[in-house]
Picture 1 (cartoon, rainbow, N blue to C red):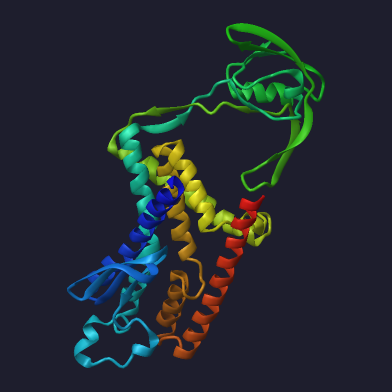
Picture 2: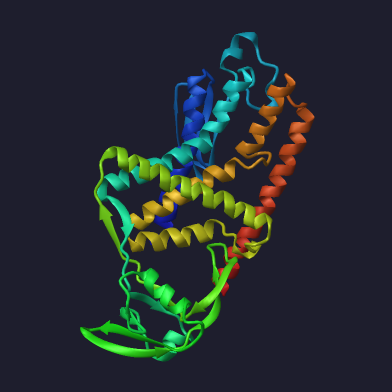
Amino acid sequence: MNTIISFILVLGVLIFVHELGHFIFAKLFGVRVLKFSLGFGPKLVGKKVGDTEYVISAFPLGGFVKMFGENPDEQQIDEAERSGSFSHKPVLARFCIVLAGPVFNLIFAVILFFGLYLAIGVPQAVDTTRVGRVNQDSPAFAAGLRAGDEILRIDGKATSRWEDVLDGVKDSGGRAITMVVRREQKEISFTVVPQQDSVKNVFGEEVERRFMIGIVKDDQVEYNRVGPVQAFVDACRQTWMYISLTVLGFIKIIQRVVPASELGGPILIAQIAGEQMKAGWINLVYFMGLLSVNLGILNLLPIPVLDGGHLVFLTVEGIMRKPVHERAQIIAQQVGIALLGALMLFVFYNDIVRILQ
């Protein structure tokens, strides 16, 4: 139940923010909005206010804003109604309306982090020599080191930072080293033989090979209270970091560095959302911010049906001074629907395989 609630909460909010961007800019440019829907499929709840029907539908895996005159087959519109038609607005206006959805997702991530940093402060890693995890079948595990041990000295040299620990192991050249740790107020000495292993980045790529003993630093974080300006700067920095990782992630998928089996769909999102909610609201906010960035970047991909595909058509129209042929748009959208459908089936398959495994 916790997983379902967190999934609906996270995805519902992000979809609402995305569609709100389209809705607000459509209104700003005088376009009539016929329907604002959260979800697809059968209508659960609906209410019409003015020209717009606001709807919550059965399947919370998306949403849409239906604007008057947005479909190619609605070009024959009376002269009196053209002022409220999407298709009869200037290219720049339509471009802004389409772009607003993904941009709102990116802005929402900034707002999330800004509010978080104002509330609790900006997180900063505490540099210690405390061991957070000892990998199974590693030299450290074989020597007897445990999580929670604080490394005091390596071969008689004091270690005050984690960098000192890394250097002490790396510079050993593979010879046995003596490590003195503090455990439960006692100092204990261990002899460890480092092994050469690969260091990988977040995408699993090998960046270097060096001597290691199989320990991970204890992740201790302290929160520094800051003012609104610094909180905003750090929120932008955090969002930009997520944007960079997301774009690089798409590139790595294309390059096959990240295997396709790692792709996940709604089931994986629900599982992670449930885990983050259990871990605390701070974790959930970070996950929501990351997912909001992912949703914004994903919709900017130049695939027909997605916002990015529409932006490509509008860019071509702006350059050529005439819209892309209606038949070409329809064919491109059909191809886009087929691609998205295949992708959805694939990620559902991955999710189910993960559960079975």
